[in-house]
Length: 366
Picture 1 (cartoon, rainbow, N blue to C red):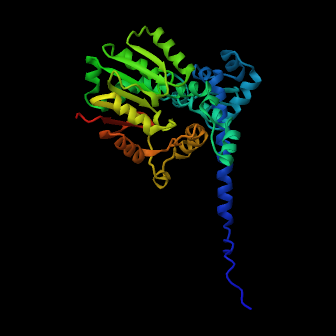
Picture 2 (cartoon, rainbow, N blue to C red):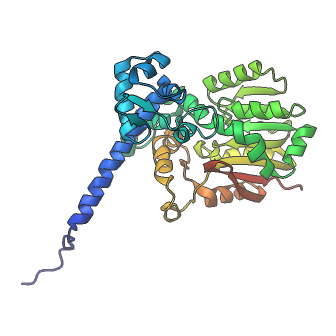
Picture 3 (cartoon, rainbow, N blue to C red):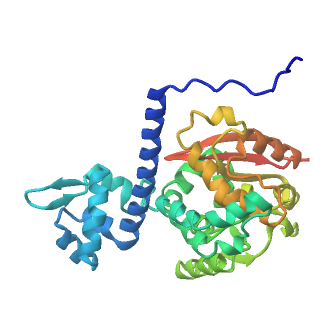
């Protein structure tokens, strides 16, 4: 009697040193995850801004921010041992180094503290995503509002303030001159409308319409437009798969919005149809490859795939959509633009933004 191959492979030899190194890496990863939550807490409560005003004891920092000292002291302990703060034990005084303050405070594009909040928020949806992973479907967009609207605004506002007019627009060719002369423009998935309002303020001769499906986002957009006294911008609640094609538009923008769509192919086709011949579409979207192997060396790739799993992909799949995900990538984006009829697509970097690329593409002139 003979026995055949059971199909089981011999157990691999275990390298104890590699086990120990990987276990250390895992513990470090979890520690950094907790540091993210502490940065979020310090950002939300004003601890970081209080530290930016100058060194102080926990009592002094708490008094500046109007907070409970015991909580402040514990949070400061986390930030100190994480290497974010310096600590003078003799004086019990905490200092936020100036170089660190640039990255964690202020209104500019270098303030990365708001990014911590997206991890905090998306973590609350992990049980629902786990259920969808088992059973299908996803977490619908209405489940993440209004918090996600606020988080995205906080993450992008400083960057757009610094880079939209002087960084993004200069790579779009003749578009700034056309905006100055006066054209019709739409912003697809405009969110809180800050980008639309920035454009409307910079180019008063042009008219702008921002579209989004979120009532709270549209409300915030209209409020800012009113505050800035912008007569040349309006905002409408709309699923952009229903984007009107009349009257035609001269230019369209989409800021990190296309990859979230339930039906992105239709949205791109509608944008193409709405543009006049020769019209331009400027799409700011995630800087990544469509191929996993090309993203392995990207230090931000784990974060991008995580955001995709916990938000961008699941929101689309919840409505039976394409589920492109955050990391749909340049190759697929260029191909989808071509499928929609766009031509002469160029891809550019965004200044001071390692996460996004600028796609500049056109409807053919004839």
